[in-house]
Length: 233
Image (cartoon, rainbow, N blue to C red):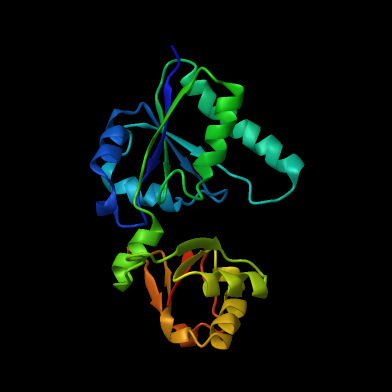
C-alpha cells in the first residue's frame, strides 16, 4: 500500500489563514514536502507553516524546483523531485506538499501531481484548497472583485501591451499575477486607459512582509516575485 500525496494550500502569507483541514493534514502526514531555495533559505510556504511545526516533529523534505525554461534541465530536475517524493510514498508514508495560495491555481504542485499520476498511477492524490493571494488582496485592499454579472479575469502579466490592454477592456476586474517584471508596461497601459486610480498593487499580501504600493511610485521600482495588481473598473 503506497502513501497518499497531499497538496496543501497554506494561504497567501498570514499563518492564521491556514484552513483547519490543512492544519490537520500537516499534523497527520508523515512527511512535509516544501519548495526549497538552492541557497538554503526557507521558502515562502515553509515560513507560513513554521508556527505550526515543532523542529524535529516531522520529516521535512525540501525540494528544489528549477527556474529555467530549458526542457532538458526541467525534465531532469523534475524527475529527481518526483523520485524523492516516491521514496516515501512507496513505503506507505503520506507526503503533504505545502504551497502558498491554492494547490490547483498556478501552483508548483500541479506539475508534480501530473508527473506522479503518469509515473506512479497507483498513488492516491488529494488536495486541500487554500485561500489564494487573490482573495487575500481583495480583503486587504477592501476591493469587491465581482458582483452581479461582473466578469473577472486572472491573467499572468507579460510583455504584450495589446493583450494586457484587451484583458482590462473586456473585463470588469482583472487580477494580474507575476506582474513584477512588466510593471512599467502595465503602468503605460493603465495611463492610456486612464485607470491608474482604479488599480492597486500589493506584494506578499497578508504576510509580515506585506507592502501595499502607491501606484504612482512604481515606475522602475524593484518588486519581488510575489506581487500582484488588481484593476477594478
